[in-house]
Image (cartoon, rainbow, N blue to C red; front, side):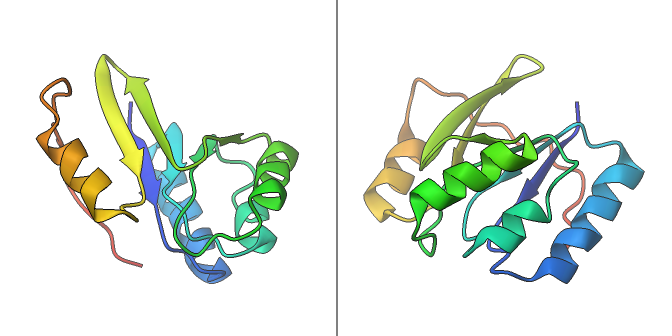
Length: 122
């Protein structure tokens, strides 16, 4: 399964539309947004994608964000989640707190692998 990853869209709706187009063209089945939507329009722009979202360091109104995800049929997982896709566990986190980031990297109970073939910068 191809996984699409977004982060730090900061209300740049044109970049979300570009990402949607790329994800559709490449057959991405699941999208994870790692936070910093900044407001509702960014979340609403992801309607039509199978999307899971977590919080970034610039996301203030958590209840509104949660509601916006519900409205588009997405999932909201707060500040951290572990996805299991095709037998792989994937830690999803914005990277806001350095000690948490370092602990995730050093964690012996999680195998970190990243078979990324290409990164597209919008």
